[in-house]
Figure 1: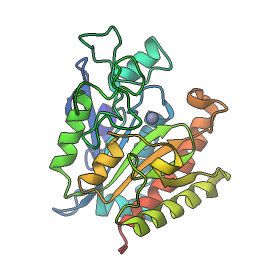
Figure 2: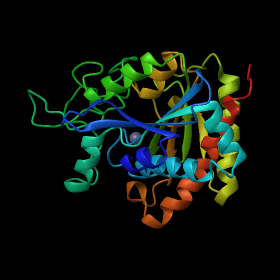
Figure 3: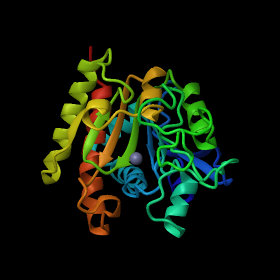
Length: 290
Ligand SMILES: [Zn+2]
């Protein structure tokens, strides 16, 4: 990130939105041509869950690909000219580090609890939207622990603050998880149809078809509640409820054969196909949908 920030200073701007529980900077890369004063933006985060390593790999891939193809690919040029991308490669940076050093299957943040010996909160159950209702746990030792209160985690608080501040500008929120091979949109916390269902559904339909065109990998898509499971306090629902009209969560490869331990040789094809879906959604944003 530091290297890109130095080398592509006309297209990349790196900044931090805050600090993690353990004091690591929460870096975001702003990508795009500074071509006009007001531009719409797309937010992308990866690695809310520590063990889902293909997420951060994709975020890095996205940045590399965008910068490498900007000159030659008209679609990419259009995207970076007409939009900004805010990319957070590792949301849960403490948990991610812990999954490398101590526990490969760690999911949560690393905050300490005063009454229990268990560490961490599920950073995707800690948002102020139907907080700690169905699909979240009140017990600090559970993997889906919602935390002592909404935005208790400094990582969630920092990103929520940034998104609130830029809610007018940001038109799409994309969050990258693994694994399931699904493209999910709101709601997570209830079985109901979102107001702009037609636009979101057609964006999802086109995105999964674009993804499949690379290697034939088929993604299921639909509302998170009925396609995956009901969960409350998720970042996607929060983003949608806070006025971001296109909110998606990707569950990348695979469907469970390797699961979180997706082998190295599958990183590149997974990123390549996912890129097609993200480009498709982004270009959809630039068209009018009613
Ligand atoms: Zn996840």
